[in-house]
Image (tube, rainbow, N blue to C red):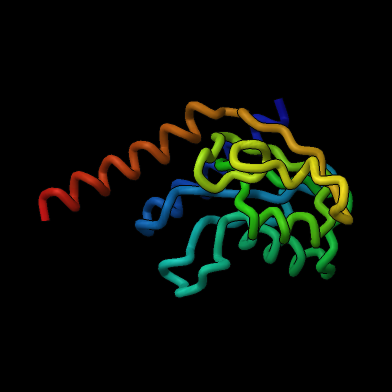
Length: 154
């Protein structure tokens, strides 16, 4: 039940991204049962290719906790992490990642490749996918369908 509650908090962040006309992906970092970091996709608005939801949530958590390492923390994100975000997750020493929808184009938790299973890497977070997958994926599908409609009208 707590996993679902935290994923719903990540979905709230995804809605904030969508309201800014960013791809609606949201994330939260949880430490000892409390949300300590929040983030949503902002690369367009911030003119920053690294401003993905996961990175924004990690930055928020690190600032709040006063440490760039986040051992024992969990990250909940609405979309399977990409290679950049997975690298940041590993460098932050996140213990567990829970994601919603799979990303068959850029997901590296098993969709394209599985960085989390790569034994040669220094840190390994446990990874679980599919939590509220339909809701997370539906938000993305709706966003891109609306964008295609706007583009075809223009």
